[in-house]
Length: 179
Image (cartoon, helix red, strand yellow):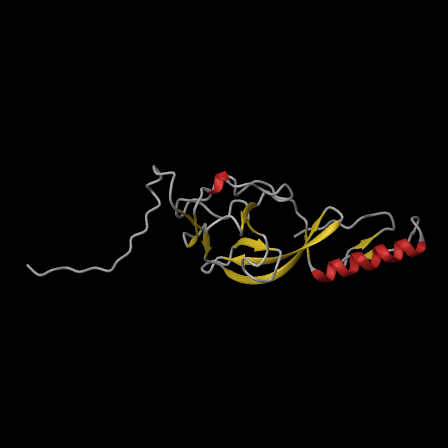
């Protein structure tokens, strides 16, 4: 009988009896994305968007994602710059950082519901409502200009403002920010 030699690597996400060791996570399209030394359910979450917080100093992990566009997100009365990371196969937003380099800042944030331990099955929280607060840079500029104009001309400014989508707003109305 001839010998059969194989260099195949088999990945299985079915055996979850062992809570120790490394944990694998997959995108909704079944692409392998993350291997980490702790279950994601044990990690803290951000209050603003319920994203999972990975501490770059305290956690050992490997994230397989493609860097993408930069987005400005409104957080209360401030703005946050997000450097988005996407699935290499389906381009779903998987994670984001607040610095331009992967693991360059203190934290990496995993988007709520983007990953699951079982391939091809969405996580139970992937459909939960998220705050709709992402704005484009052009809209941020227009909002800022309108706020400056309102400040310079007093609270009772009764002129018309225009959003990035071309919608006219009366003086007292606030723009509705949609993603």
